[in-house]
Length: 443
Image 1 (cartoon, rainbow, N blue to C red):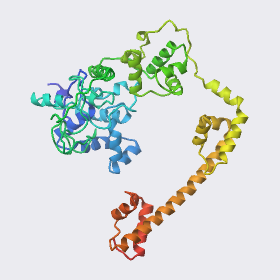
Image 2: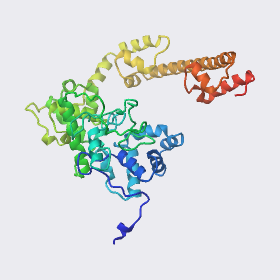
Image 3: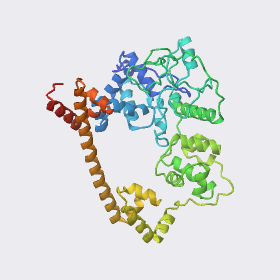
């Protein structure tokens, strides 16, 4: 027997489900099943792993302060972020299970971003759950169910369920919850494979079918470990290549794909990556292979005869030239806007002039600083006024509640003010306590 087969691990070597196909298990599902195998809540296991892995102060503070904010961030664990990478590396060490990155979209982190990537809550196919339970197979949640653009089950081509089928519950289910059990509602504990009373048959759109099948193929590639070269410039190259189809005309290209031209310019220059939905829409409209687009394989993206264009530096230089020719006029408009009361912020001034705030800073640095200074002073005064008003409201509410022979407890004062949680702030909490002391009450 080899040494590796004899070695013990701190966590069970739980085998991921649905490997090497488009129904590959998600990382969140794997964590949930692993926690159940250890008889602990998913959140308990995730916190323990995170605390021993994470080095970023803001994440550690989130965990210490109740972990509510941390689990908001953890909703993207199936994605491509640093948190996903840290958790997977730690899980691999604790379980000795390889290739856990294939339970997420992490292999595509150079071409995909987490923005608009996932649904706000869980989605599932009740027919899949039912079939797996009847055949006594392991219940798990495929990665594709969590993706925002996959609204259909790729197996049964029916719309995914997003609310508990129990008519007395009907709640959406969080991507990560404290008491999650795969296949069951954490609120009412009903089996999610139970069909709803009214299952309306909505006609499937071409987009829904295409998007689901495309994402299914993407996950199948990811799960099977097929090596594809994906670099930071892959998507940028695909955008530049598509721009050639429009003769280098950014405006025409932007209109064709229904995006603002400045956004298209940033994508073409690799300033940042577009959301997955944007790439899917472009590939659907242009009838382009989604995988070829992500990998920057421009040889398989058909180029029309009108390919003699060039890749321009957008219209940045033209915009600068236009501003330089109207510098005096723009300056007068800025000075007029500076006379408005209450004062406007730099962003609002730029919006009204239909130029960027960076342009104002570059061409009018003195005016820019004056605008910011005036606005900051105005904000500070308003902040003081709001603070004084709130303090007065708290004192008044304590007095009025006391007049009704009721005790001005914290929750009662917050409800009276219709401002839940306001007294959790130390400054307002001190005002509340002082108001009670002045009335000789001991709460």
